[in-house]
Amino acid sequence: MEEIVNLFHGFAVVVQPFNLLLMVIGILLGVMIGVLPGLGGANGVAILLPLTFSMSPTSAIIMLSCIYWGALFGGAITSILFNIPGEPWSVATTFDGHPMAQQGRAGEALTAAFTSSFVGALFAVIVITLVAPLVAKFALQFGPAEKFAVFFLAFCSFIGMGKEPPFKTVAAMMIGFALAAVGMDSVTGQLRLTFGFTEMLNGFDFLIAVIGLFGIGEILLTMEEGLAFRGRAAGINLKVVIQTWKELPRYWMTSIRSCLIGCWMGISPAGATPASFMSYGIAKRTSKRGDNFGKGEIEGVIAPETAAHAAGTAALLPMLSLGVPGSPTAAVLLGGLLIWGLQPGPLLFVEQKEFVWGLIASMYVGNLVGLIVVLTCVPLFAAILRVPFSIIAPNILVLCAIGAYSVHNSAFDVVLMLVFGVIGYLMKKCNYPMAPLVLAIVLGDRAEEAFRQSLLGSQGSLSVFWSNGLVGTIMALGLIALFWGLISEGWARAKALLPRSAL
Image 1 (cartoon, rainbow, N blue to C red):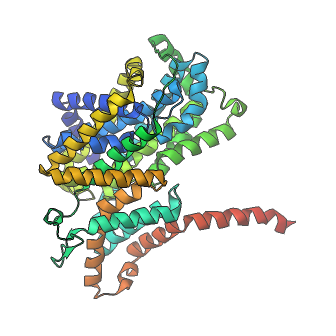
Image 2 (cartoon, one colour):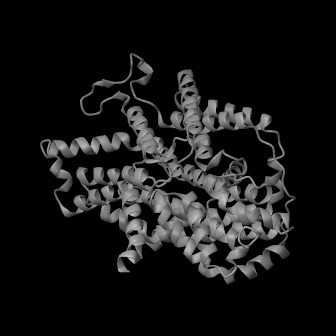
Image 3 (cartoon, rainbow, N blue to C red):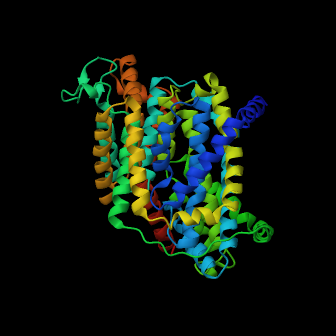
């Protein structure tokens, strides 16, 4: 009951005119980012984070989260109209969305995609509303050993359950740990890895790193690949929307299943992309019209869009309740919270109730605003793809440079941003994942601090991480997540051998 009252207080914060204006601006910027192939939600949030420095934390997180929702919506537009996934999780949408557009059913496909995205997000927000406060209350009992165990679980989950090769994930994570260690040691006061540069006494600023890694790296890669767009005309009218809405309830089972898949994948660090592919694959196998998938089946649009949006939203649950991000965008948002002086985790629900419930309420309102905006402005957003990339790219680069400079009013930060941009470009070229690196930069200091506090309390004994049932269970879950690939492969082989042995 207390949560419901807090949620209504959150709605009172969100519906203030200034916050509603930020919400609309955030959605519009997010859809533009989602429409531009490759830029992505995490990149967009990282680039635009400096815009929020002068705002209150609640207004800032409302705007940034709405950029995220907008990016999630925007990816579907390019997938359906141009057969170019604006986001990785929109790839599965192209399988049936673009054939529908080629058949002259673009309005139907877009309406189905946007509505399914809204349903997936709404389901995930309800889960966050009900579950996050309970998880946060439980997490208040955590000491240093339990906190480190949670970080250990997050790192292991990224290694064992991510879609990237584990050794590449470990390599990226190690680079992140090294970057997080630069600067003054908070325990001993000694300098680490500064190489005589006084600008590095306080370590790398998280924001400069993510602007370079995500923003500059992506722009360099996109400039190298070049872009050429050939798409279908877009148009949605009220009649098409209502006709599609009448048809969607027939696929209620697909929607519910996709919501569950999305939430699970979002809370675990698997992310929205595997969720969309898994949901599409299961829908194809279980649908009565499975043979028609790939030829313009509306169910093939509903399944991936619902799962992707549910996963993208559910990724904020561990960030809010435990201080552990479930996706790259959540990691960037978590960095933003730290910049604004907020400490993500269970205490956030106690010390910053207005902020937390304002954010959760904005998820409800923001997704509704996003649905209305994208349904009414599709031709406008599709036109963005007809602007030459040679005009868009320099503007984004200038925006990145201004954002990096504004952190400390230092030209050295702009140079650092460019260095991180080259690192990000090389990592993308070599197919190394960026999310583990960002996770390690954000959580590296906190994990190290919890680890050292635990060892100080136990006089150096590692048995502290198995000293009670709670910490032991979390550590065991971390080890299971770490070796999940081997466990699932062994289980699959055992199942394959079972019929032979039975014979």
